[in-house]
Image (tube, rainbow, N blue to C red; front, side, top):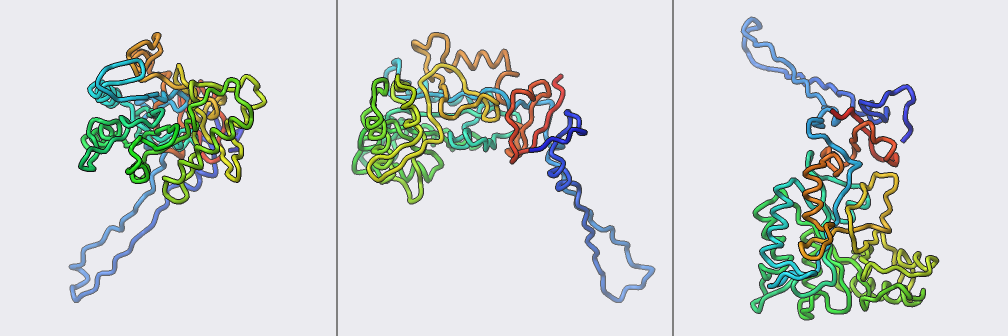
Length: 357
């Protein structure tokens, strides 16, 4: 996007978009036919529909800040006993309710890294992720029904009772048999995607890539992506990766193969690579945003070293200006004017800045 040097910051820039959105006035003339006398005819006032400038719909009292940070929450298991990598059913439900009450709304990982943030105005996007693809993430009972106490079952029910809390999450799967019930594997994956959620790559054998070779990396990621796509609907690409143990090769020249490579005749390319911890991620519009190295936040209350989900929720309660607050329009990036130097100019979006009170 080219900025008009004559246009001051504080309203909006991108003159081309502005002109396209100038009010379009159309007159609809209604012809009344009949035998009534001219003196008895009632004058008809023509309707004048006016297209509203989307900028005018942004409520600045909500302090939108689309340069703020976004939490990518990292879950593993849902179980009966709270452990370092396990949330109980009740605690997971508590997590969702807390997020909802504090104004957080899930978005997909793909939408996050592509900057397609459709979160309602005044709310904060959050990304939900689950590692490993265990049975407690997505379980069918003996009668073939969805277990209401598995992660997917809890998410589906919460979305039913809170329809403004989108059904968005990514499940990163390692090893064979996604979600551990082989008779249902394809049905589960297809249904998951049909509901709007996603699956991602967590390597074939949950390999630590610290000492891995190029061949190791391409085999682990290429094999797993190709394998997982045998369960997905036609055209669906497995193109996101959660690093096992958050590990990267010591040889930095090999990191490129975490992003893309070839296994036999199959080529993979990841648009997002997730680490293990320990802090929120940057806005996708931030100048330092790197989708190939995204930190996550532990969704736990055990052994989190003051950098868990609830620590950051409390922090953002006290420092709301540091989190991403949506303007409600994915085509406009709204930020306080003092933060403009923190953004990468996006030609496909309009930038709107305002003086923060």
